[in-house]
Image (tube, rainbow, N blue to C red; front, side, top):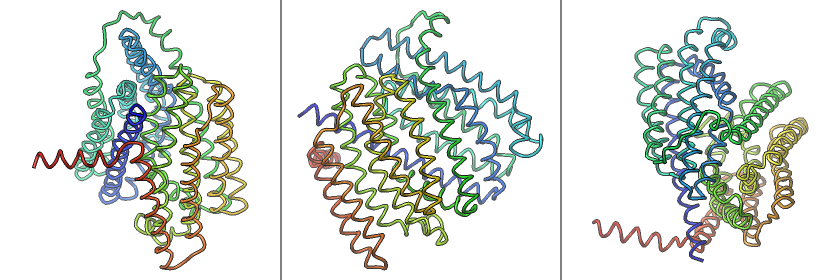
Amino acid sequence: MTENRSSYRHILKATSIFGGVQAFSILIGMVRVKFVALLLGTVGVGMIGLFNSPLQLILSITGLGIAFSAVRDISEAQGTKDQSKIAIAITTLRRWSWFTGLLGTVVTLALAPFLSQWSFGSREYTWAFIWLSVTLFIQTVSRGQSAILQGTRRIKDMAKASVYGSLIGLLAAVPLYYYFGVKGIVPSLIISAITGFLLSWYFSRRVTIEKVNLSYRETIMHGENMVKLGIIMTIIGIIGTLTGYVLNAFIRKVGGIDQVGLYSAGWSIILQSTDLVFAAMATDYFPRLSEINKEDSKIAIMVNQQAEMALIILAPILVLLISAMPLIIRLLYAPSFLPVVVFANWMVLGIILKGLVWSIGFIFPAKGDLKSFGIIEITAIVFNLTTNVIGYKLYGLEGLGISFIVDYIFGLLLTLFFAKKKYGFKFEKETVIQFIVSLLLVTVVFLLSYFIKGSIRYVYVSVVFIISVIYSLRELDKRVGIRIIINDLICKFTRKG
């Protein structure tokens, strides 16, 4: 029981830390966009996007997904407590990061005239892309250093690096935009990259490792598994980006540009509101799972615990989202965006399923099961594009929301099938109960919002929200001892006072 409580508390702690970081990053992003809009106007906003989009694409391709895949190798070595294996994994990552970083820089330098032509319709910004090529190297090495922190589970250092980086980047960018206008964009992007690099370097150097004599032939050999998983991740990412582009193009063709805007706004609201849970899952849960990837019984326990906590934390968030969706849209956008409400609410229903799918889905990369992982992801992407096109064709934006649910039902069944067949995984009774209760709460508030209009609606949904909060707090208390934690904090602050 004590061991389980410790595990649940770790999940809650990680979710709190990375949820806070995610919220802070979103806030900084909103402030940055506001300053860019005020100081540079629509032209500046557009230019930043035209610089960033091709550079991020090159970064994702030339980086070979090393920053993600290395987390598995470092975590697995960490689980053995063998200092030599840990040192080999970290040294291998550092060398591969330098190589892929240089590769990204060389590719950007070679393509600079073409990137300028494709992005801006002329070669006027060739030198801008040449200067920005250095950020490819800096960002790749920085991501590698962040992977060291993630793999060794130094979550506080990761959080500090992210928060400080966002804040310093904002403070450096605003004066440049103010004094130099659009000419300050390139320097601000370079400074932001350097800031992230210095912070990740500072914190990653706190991870002490043994000195190992590793030849470059051995570096290549030890890096093969990193590269294989990384390439699979890269391919999946590219396919996902392309299908997203195809869907946006289809929506524009059938419904017009305004429909694309509504679709993007709905996505943005839902993802930003729920990423506090999924960011923690990707950052902390994946390395913990990788650390025990040889023990199926321990994996089953951890996956069920993660799924339970995700559902408990998500339930009141999702109930609140549906309850306040019209207000949120008015606050963040404008009344003209209110047609997003129904589409976004359907998506919220699907997020409950996402909590289960993500919990199981990390099993495959944690185990290095590239074949199953690739089959699941690519099949799901193709299925998603098909259902989205059909859904929008039949029911417009609401059809996209419905297809989101269908996609995650399919994804859950597909992922469960592979996990059961290969590793004997199944959800425990407690997890299933949590899913049913969470789904029931979210469904009730969805139906109330769908069928009841006017001010009275807020009375009903408020009652459901209060019930969801009480339920989640009660379930958290059973697992982590919320009351004990609160009493300890009160005593701590009382003693200080």
